[in-house]
Image 1 (cartoon, rainbow, N blue to C red):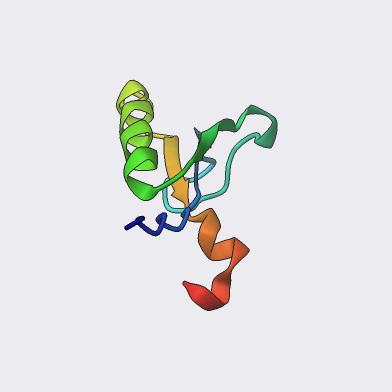
Image 2: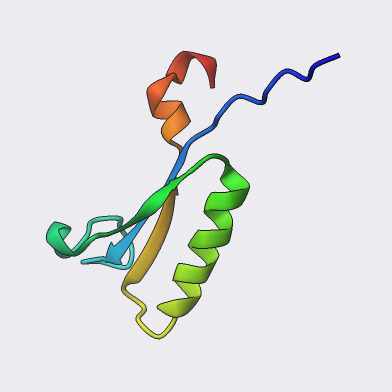
Amino acid sequence: MTETPKKQLLHLVIGGELSDLEGVEFTNLDEVDIVGVYPNYSAAHKVWKQKAQMTVDNAHMRYFIVHLHRLMDPEND
């Protein structure tokens, strides 16, 4: 009996300095840190946590997890 492979749920981790702590607008798009694309939320969260902890001293620096699978196939979310 073979197992059905799990569906790939791609996630993108990005970060950068925000222009306002209340929003999600980056100060400079040329300096946005595109960390990488990960096959599932768990892997993305692990990297997000590492990057966020590295920048804890800068209140304007934020990292985000983008659910790419929702953008690629919004009807089957």
